[in-house]
Length: 272
Image (tube, rainbow, N blue to C red; front, side, top):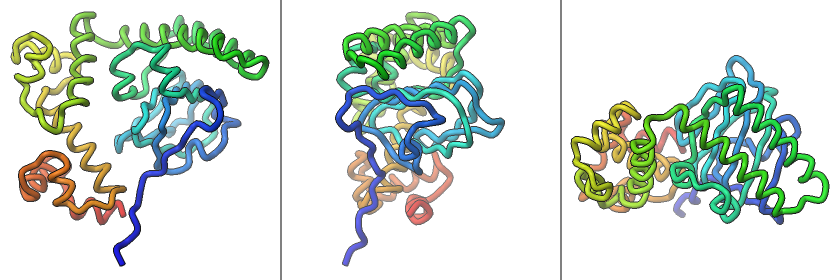
């Protein structure tokens, strides 16, 4: 008999479209080993330990006080709680897309980012209002209004830590385009054409804001999907190669080893 398929557990919102808990009192299932969500999750780490870290899509991120991380549906997440303090907002896709227009978050969440003093005060006020309403009348329209204001503050904080407005908008659009087309479109000129700028200009923007190139961004997205499939899927290496648009398994294996330092067969065994 073939081995049973090993899938990444997916956490779902139950009867509510919006949930607010704290890291101190939240259900441990929220952070139980590797998992993904079918909803958006906003985590505000108000106080962390010296060695606190989380894993997001196989990348480790050490945490600081007053960082926020936004996890998009489908992202692979893992964290072992060690007494950190803060808030967890679980928001359905429908509500999140209604109140938040930050394209890069809608397509791929965010790595942890810091709140400055002003942003921290505003977010603290809004969280208090949300908490009071959630534990009281829990009027969804009011909760959505508070959440929308919270997202406005978040957007400002992200913008403060990014590049110029035009370049930032292009990067956000590029992330969405790569998410949509990375399996079949791997050439920089396709994305430059979509953004109506030259390939040279696009690579300059990406290099200055991200420290990388468009080609490497596409490769990293392919690598991430390959790791997801190898870690938790039931497909063979050959099947994964064709699913990700590679012409043959050997080409896929060379690509995977070049970008990860490991053979896909070894990675699959190591994660099994």
